[in-house]
Image: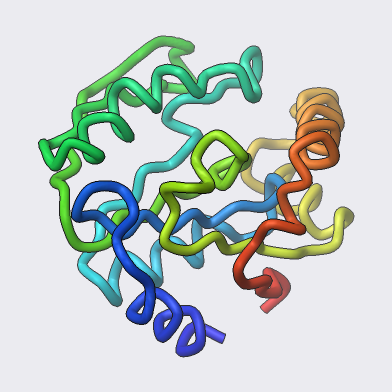
Length: 177
């Protein structure tokens, strides 16, 4: 699976300035971070997690900050600077720099949304059964997070239906391995 994804990235063209922006999308707990990490190692690429912008209180309406801090600068071929959201402190934290050119992996829920599709070199959807995704999330966040996960999953379900995200993916991979 990884070899096929790598080949598709290599064959893609930059569509965000000189940068090949690769989105690794799918619902929470699907395995997106694992795949993004593998791609980062393959291409010596930066990973920009949407979790650096989202929060339990703001599941999807953070996109304008990603646009202004990351996508617009990269599109102009200048370094991007974004401030990571710290989920534990519930506040913005340290700054990260992303250099233009090469491959940049945009990883997380809604990373291939309609607002960015024309600038993506490749949109990947990680497909994983809902019970496994929830189990992974609760393993990471603890069983007390169940109500948060239930709301998160409802929000992302609504987004994915309205955005028709999966249907626009260039490649669908399994997140069960």
